[in-house]
Image (cartoon, rainbow, N blue to C red; front, side, top):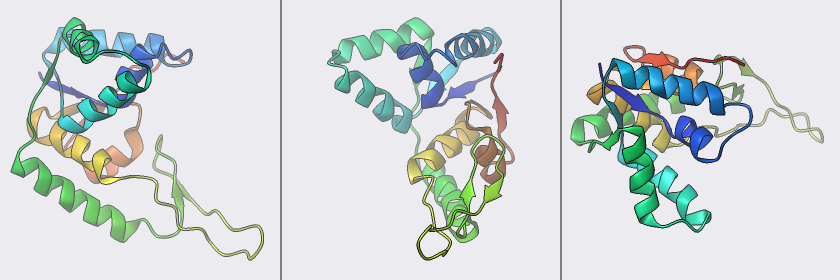
Amino acid sequence: MITAVDTNVLLDVLLADERFLESSIKSLEEASREGDLIICEAVMAELASAFIRSGREESELFSFLSDLGIELVPSGAEVAIRAAEAWSEYVSRRGVGVIYPGCGEVFDVRCPSCGRSIRWRQHVITDFLIGAHASVHAGRLLTRDRGYYRSYFPELEVVYRWEG
């Protein structure tokens, strides 16, 4: 079984996040025992950004991925089209509410001065490229952001071993 890995799980490990480190490590270990781990270019870019900001060398990024047994798998046109379809659906559905990424619940946020609803742009196309890549190349995604992936990629198995 192939598992695509989202950036948030890798950043939990890289940055030793107090809240999520243990769960992310266990989730990666479990997914690795079940098969290959892959990432797409968007995850690679987000992760590389964290390395650059912390002054680390490019070689350290590749060592980090290698140590975790993670391979970069190119996306291709099918992924771009699938991401565009999901993004288009998101844009048409998002309305004025804010979506909590954990469960997908939508709630309203209003301006304290005029009382109008605030239209919030919570996701970017990168999120949909990650979901589409996982859908096309893996069939499952290891991520903490479960809500919207389930909404826009229903064919995708979303996994994470939370022990919080």
